[in-house]
Length: 410
Ligand code: SAH
Ligand code: SF4
Image (tube, rainbow, N blue to C red; front, side):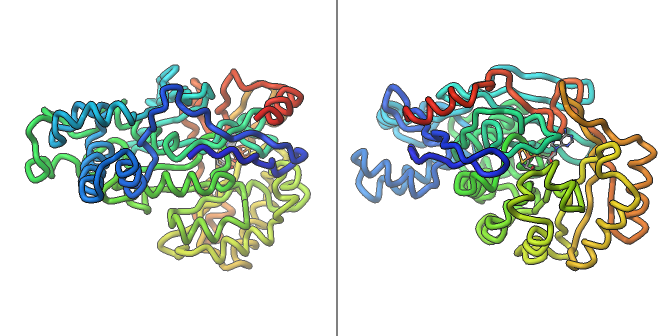
């Protein structure tokens, strides 16, 4: 699990190696959260169980972890009493630590979380009338630096592990009280089956739109989402999961093939000049390449459209001509697309202003009139800095020199 590779930083900044190792636990125990069932079985075998026992126990433990949400081996009542301490000596059931939980006046909730090795990141829950969406982070900070995004100004970056990514979903279920209720003792599967279907849940959707660029942490995001989608795991449908990318073109086909969730693309501009400036990864993978990759995205269809996110920046990307060019591009590449217009969410020192409401409405009308849906997103959780692009944790303001030193030491 511990990966000591250095991660080169792509994008606007010069390549700079950043250690992405996670510090192993001091007590030597292994966190099971984030591991596929087969890996848990292998660990049980390595720890001394015979093959048959390892298989049986891993299946039971996996069920307790992801269906029941238990955080103690002692609660696993169908596992022999003597075996539970044996497990607890060797393994842990991790959750990211909650440093702070905030509530917005509009019901949005934000959690400041901390990894076992002391890095802070954030997760946001957005309740709506007909759904509840959890906005999950994939990295601490982001190696890219889109000029309108607060996360992009964070310097320290580490990829989150599969356990830290799926752990956010589990923590949200903890906080929302969405694990099966009642006494856990003595219930077998048949009795309990009705209690944990997806129906009636508050947390119904997941968007990979928190901190970080998920396609620069592909393996971990994929492994985490597989646990989220696994019928024996958290069992959320891939149709209820959306991955947002700023346009890491070389990873998009793999995302479709190996993860298969809905795709959202942070387009934000329709000319090279403007997109180069505000989404600097555009200098590496331009608009044409990006839209070709969208057209080829496995699973995209009229029933499953690609969402183009478009942040509305005053006098930057919000003219009638921009709206028309957006339509032209969507038609040229024959994209099954919808557009999400996101009013710019301000943050201290941001170099932009949000477009006026009239301008956003006009932009939306032009796109709608051409037959493409372009709803205007209502900002959520602005009062607690939980809205798109406002996520940034206070602790992560290290200098380049400091990062270089740390990378060299790792
Ligand atoms: N890194 C990924 C996913 C996280 S950002 C990506 O860029 O797609 C989620 C969305 O919020 C992206 O579309 C992003 O461009 C947008 N966003 C960033 N900063 C914003 C801001 N200040 N106001 C509104 N939207 C913003
Ligand atoms: Fe990173 Fe996305 Fe923010 Fe750009 S918009 S800096 S890719 S998190």
